[in-house]
Image (cartoon, rainbow, N blue to C red; front, side, top):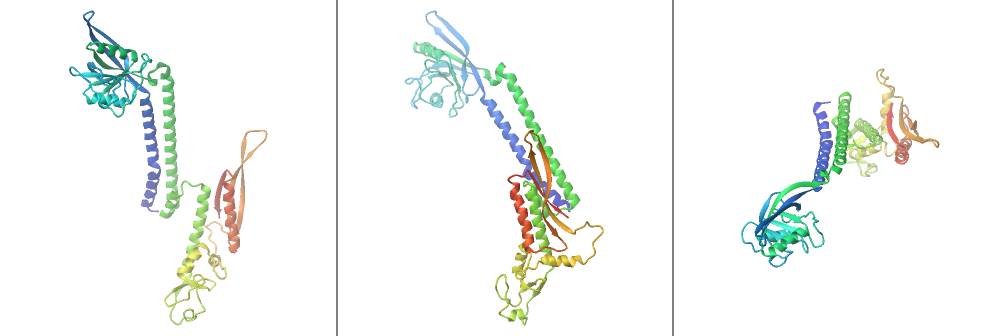
Length: 429
């Protein structure tokens, strides 16, 4: 076995199995990151200042009563508070604002349209920030706004009580100044009652995931190591390597059955290669006679055509008989088995003392049956060996007996899918 074949097989295994774990881990990490991000929201400090004409002094208040929108930048903003000129909901594209000076902040009421439309209406007029207050009857409750179509501008929501007070001040002619500052993050991760359970859950999931990927990695390394040992010890050819890689996910029983079929096909190819091949010439009785034809294609023999002569002395076109013999290693006319002639020739040679005995050829089916007792829940495994057929090498059976052998194997495979837990097919020599 040459080194490049082994390297190719290992590269194929890595190419097939390698990226799956990497992409899976990236996908899990991305899902966890998005989930954790969706559970967090940021509050805002809102400072309100205005000049009270009655007391002739400036009045100010500050509270952590605002909530930043999901798509709002987490930055500070300040300016003169301005109301829409006509529609307080600012749902129309023609909504206008009249600001005495820059910078200014739009104060809009929730309702009738999306948050993005309200924010875009103020953004088009040059607002530096947008404050949306909740609908009537909600008190100081706020909601988390999503405005993916209106990004790049600070947008917060405040309660209905605070929003209504600011609207009244502006309508009374007071110049109201609002300053917005980033407060603190909130969510399940930041609540003390949830912190420890969530931390333990996250640590447990992370540990189980790491152990799972470590198990897969060790299992794959062990499998590759065993595969490399087989390549070195048994000198597996490149064709065998590709076969094992191709059918690596099939059950061992199916792979063994395919191996038996491929082995028989290789034996047929060896026997076909030893058959006599002759080129017909002018004057040969097969060419001159019109009554002689190839049984496979029913065409007569012609000059310069190659014919294959079987041990039973029947002959056919070489291109016709070889595909037939690969599937049916018997003569189409007399059913003579070409492997029988080969074995009869080899039986005259003395057996080698170093090679194992090959007097019998067995196809064995080893299966594991689960026996359940009525008075106990314990399950015991009973291994039993069933010989579907025993084929004698010294007297190879005819076509019907071989067909019965493979029919038996096929029946065992069908039975496997219904009631047998473990099924292995072995070739015992």
